[in-house]
Image 1 (cartoon, one colour):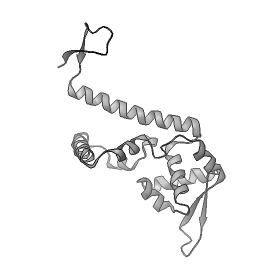
Image 2: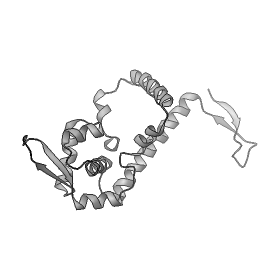
Image 3: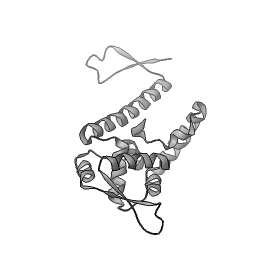
Amino acid sequence: MSRLSLDPASPDAQRAAPVPDRATRVLRRFRMVFNAVKAHFQQVEKVAGIGGAQLWALSVVQAQPGIGVGSLAKAMDVHQTTASNLVKGLVEQGMLESHRSGIDRRASQLKLTRAGGRVLARAPGPFAGVLPQALAKLDEATLARLDADLAALLRMLQPDQRAARTPLANM
C-alpha cells in the first residue's frame, strides 16, 4: 500500500506524489544497481572494444605478469573454465601471450602484449567493474548486513549456484 508524501524537490509541491512501499523501493534500488553495472560495461565495450570480463583479465595479467590461468581464475573469482575461455579469446586477439615454461609444461604463463596494454590505456575503469569497487568501499558492518540480507533473499529465489562465479560483465 502506498502512502502519499509531498515531494519538496518538485516545482509543484502542492501535488502529492505516491511514496512506493518498501518492496517497490528495494526493487527500484536493484534496478539502479543493475543499470549502473550494465552502463559501465557498455561504456567499457564501446571505448575499449572488448567485454568487461576480458578487460578485467587483462588488468590482472598486467598487475601480475606471468600469472597462470588457475591463479587468474582465483583473482577474478571465476571458474577456471571461464578464465581459460577469456584467455583463449585474448590470445587470439593478440592482447595476451601464453607461454609454457618451467618444469610443468602444462601450466602456461600469461603476459600482456603491447596491443593489450593499449586497450587497457584507453579503457575506462574500474577494470573489475563498478559494483566490486563500490562494495570494497563499504565498511565491514554494512557488508555483513548486506551479506546476511542478500543470503535471505537468495534462499527465497533458489538460484543456480554456478551463477555466483559468473562475471557480471557476462550477464
